[in-house]
Length: 374
Image 1: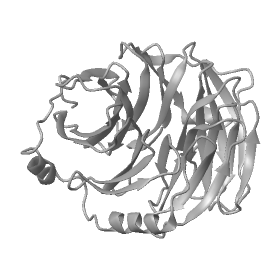
Image 2: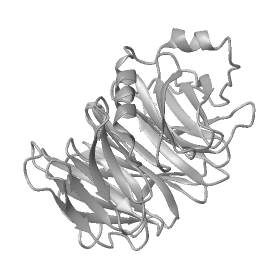
Image 3: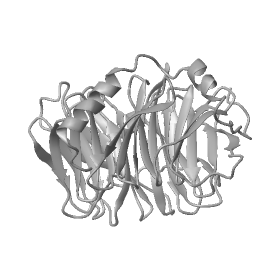
């Protein structure tokens, strides 16, 4: 039977996982639905900054400079990835399928890990300040990163090199690719910008007057869900260029993170939001089979974690296996963004082992202390 796994990280260093049957999310539960954790691990000695999933694998990063690895299918921890030089706090993580993991740290480094033996294949210095977020293109060929140095960097995962660097007008804390990879969005303190990769045109600006957007996810090809500092949940319709749904006080405190999984049903998604008040809420987002209908959000249920939550991801499991894993700006100039699109178009392969092995001659590799995931 299909199910949704919801994984949360906390300020206290704990990681909590819940599993819900997809059929139970078809209707609202006004009186609540008993939901017990399927696992709870004290993975980090410091705050958990990020969590990511990739086809059965989960990784969390914390202020203790470590990356913890967990097998969601077997509900088993596989230890931690430690850096020989001590490293820095891990701010962001992103999987490419079940083969590679990309991490960004407070020291400005971007590292690529191979999941078969958890070896750090490559570590490169790109940003002059902390890497705040990283997003891998759906093709797996390139990745975008944003940093506290107000830079947007395009990484070629085939060669492990930075193809392009763009100076932003302000620091952006989040970057996300669209489903097609033809667009991406940047979240800054007061708005979310949606940009076209190839033309460099800024397509949409999604303003937030009640605080910075802390959680941002594509809900479909034309819908973007955002959660703000003020606790408001919004769904933006990019085709109609408007905010289609606004839920004031969706949480008592700020919406720290969002995740979206497909189902139950065609034209329906499940939206998961986490707040620093310790609550995780699930919402049914109805947007039609072809995004032609007016979107609607219906509250489903609340999970009380009793933790100060910092990050969130959600994974959809089907009887055939893992079906999907989804999480879990400035105003760049048109000329520069056009060159960024051209730089992205030059890549023509998935993460290449020979390429990163060639780079090993120039950089010392850092090996993981955790065991391999089977």
